Length: 261
Image 1 (tube, rainbow, N blue to C red):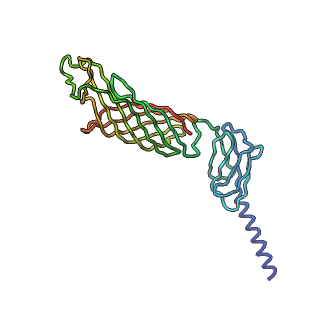
Image 2 (cartoon, helix red, strand yellow):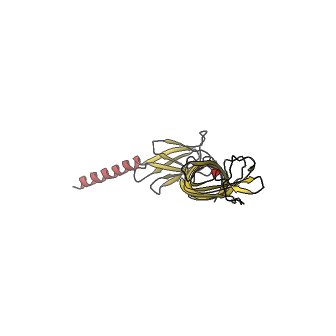
Image 3 (cartoon, rainbow, N blue to C red):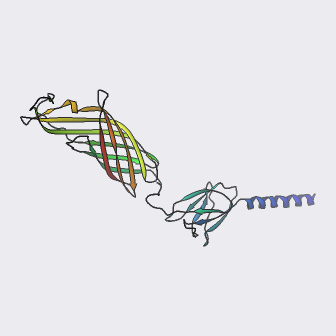
C-alpha cells in the first residue's frame, strides 16, 4: 500500500513537472535589422506573468496555463502582439507619426473654410469638433454673412442692361457624422446636414437684387479625409448640397486645419 502511494506521488510530481515544462514561452526580440533588443518587456496576454529580455534579446516565461499570445513593449518601438510559437522571433519597428496607433479617444478641433462653386469666390469659415480613436464622431459648420439686397424681386438674367456682372453671395452648412481611422494617420469622415446659399446680382442702377436661380437650400452630404500629423491634422473634402426641388445645388470644396488634445 505504501509502495503504491509512493509510486502515485512520484507519478503526479512527474506529470506536474512535465506540464510546466510544456508551458514555457521562449523567444527573441529584435529590431527591424535583426539586432537583439535587451530590456524589452514581454507579457503573457490574459495573465500577470511577464519578464524582461536578456542582453541577447532572448526571454523565457514559465506559465501556469498554456499561453496563446504575448505582448512586447519597448520605449520608442511599436507595441507588438504575437501568437505563441516555439522559439519565436519578434521583430519591433520604431514608432513614428505615420505608424503610431491611438491609445485612447482624443478630442480634436479645427478651423474650416468652404468654397462654393462660383467665379466670384467668397469663402465661408467655421469650425470642426469631434472625438476619435478607431471610430468617433464630429460636427462641422461654416458661415458667411448673407448679402444685403435692395430689391426682393428675381433678377431677369436675360434683360440687357439689367445687371453689371457683379455678384454677392453667402453660404452656410451644418453637418454631423462619423469618422473612422483607415490607417494610423488617415481618417475618413462622412456626415449629413443642411445648407443654404443666397445670391444677389448688381443691377445697372447699382442696387442688388436676389437671383433665386443661383440659390438653393436643403440636404447636405459631407465627405472627406483627415491626415493626422503628431498632434495636428489637415482635412479636405466636399459637401454635396441638395436643393428643395430635389436637384443638387453644387459641390462645395472644404479644407481645414486643427489640433488633437
